[in-house]
Image 1 (tube, rainbow, N blue to C red):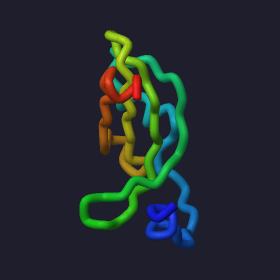
Image 2 (image 1 turned 30 degrees about the vertical axis):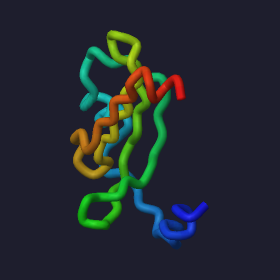
Image 3 (image 1 turned 90 degrees about the horizontal axis):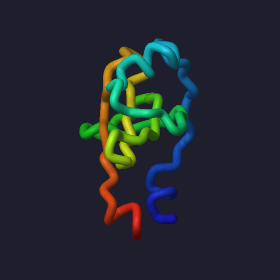
Image 4 (image 1 turned 90 degrees about the vertical axis):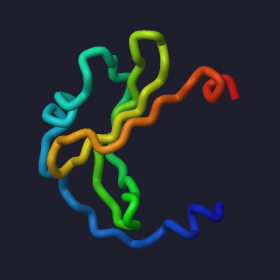
Length: 88
């Protein structure tokens, strides 16, 4: 709840500059997309970036989340969930 309070603020909705299909093209062929959504990612500098988030499955069954920048279609952040995290 504390994170919600710290990070909740009014935002002006922005439209993505690249399409969902262009964002999907930034994903490696070895990943199978399980779900997708739009989200706002925090940058290291404390700013915000509109991204397409893809939850994927890798070739070894691992869960990989890839955030693709909705402004330029490039991969922004990759999160690999290992087996121990999934079991918890």
